Length: 177
Image (cartoon, rainbow, N blue to C red; front, side):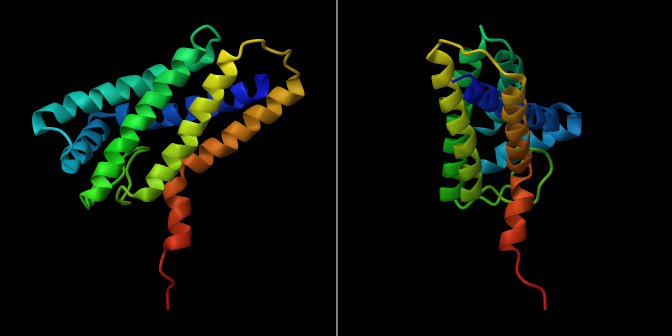
């Protein structure tokens, strides 16, 4: 199960790298993410900045954990736990009819919605499949061509995940007269 591990690990590493970078690239970016969390009213206002910092720290930790075979299982578990927590937050926000914009991958005007749960489900599946394949042990020899295909597939899927709001908007935008 070497190639699923490569694909799932690379997908998660790329997605969390972009997500973390979108929040740490400057004070305004982190403030925007923290403000969007505050707007969801899931936590007391005084705790949202700390919660936002914890989320970003987890996002920063996941890619390097996924890079090394010895820490890869921890990376998959941390990714799964974070994705579950974020999904619960999104679901609660949706149920409260929150119109807070999604700041998962940087500035966006798209409010959090069910489509973000779909995106998180794709990443959660990658975390579970990658973690399960990693835990099964017995790594197989890696053929360079197979690794290239696995990494290419992960890269393409990562682009789709990161740009998910833009892609969804193409299909949900009202037609112009």
